[in-house]
Image 1: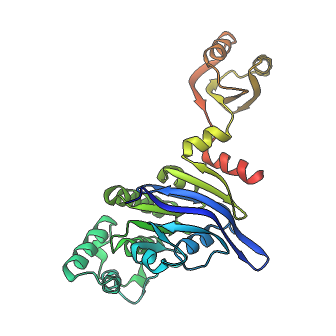
Image 2 (image 1 turned 60 degrees about the vertical axis):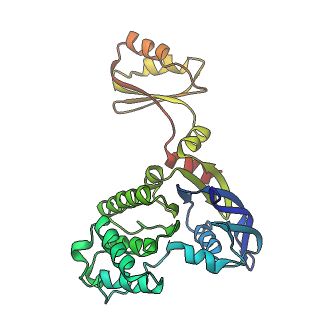
Image 3 (image 1 turned 90 degrees about the horizontal axis):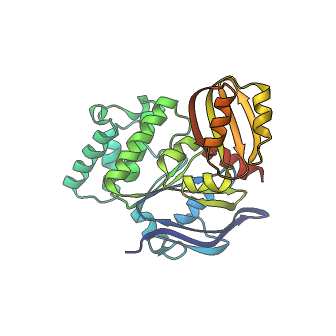
Length: 308
């Protein structure tokens, strides 16, 4: 079995004069959560539809779980789970009956089907409410059930298109935690699109950033932060006088100094030891509570990429 779950080579798709995806080349290893980030209209959903064989590429090729998306799309869809724009739930049915229906569609044996339904609903905190009509549930509960639907037939790869969109912060955090636990327990590969950068930073072992159909960057979140950010030192305390700021700016390895309340941020031209700067601060009478070397957040990296 290949160690690669998804492989694309110059994958492209146009709709008339609109180039929705242009020469996408990437590899997604098995057993990770891969985050695919980009603004609306950047090509994220088009990519998922191409990978599922729901759209034909204009150019290029892709393989999913070792199957070609052009000629073996049915085999891909049989071995994957997907939560796209709509949860795919029947709201007049109960949660258990929804999963029972989909389990029969997947032709799962009765004992396996019922065992799997109980397992997923229990893990997602829905077992005690399995007999309730889904139409009466909150959006967060419906999304958790939709994740269970996508994972019901033990797929080695699942596609989640903005699964926490529209959820309140508590519901989104609960779904992220439950998803993280299930992924770790079952070892599945997840291809996740999201606008929530904190969510991507927490869940994903690898991230790709796309804009206007073009892949701008790919790598581990730490790698992207280090590649796109300038080193800096952050100091929490008091006594950050204008005179002190002038002293700091005069240092040859300091590119910028900013103060916001009790936080002093020193941006550096290149990585350097914090000790000389801390000594200067102490000499000038600064009351230091905390010193740490900082790097850009994933949000800052994303905004930098979008601005270029």
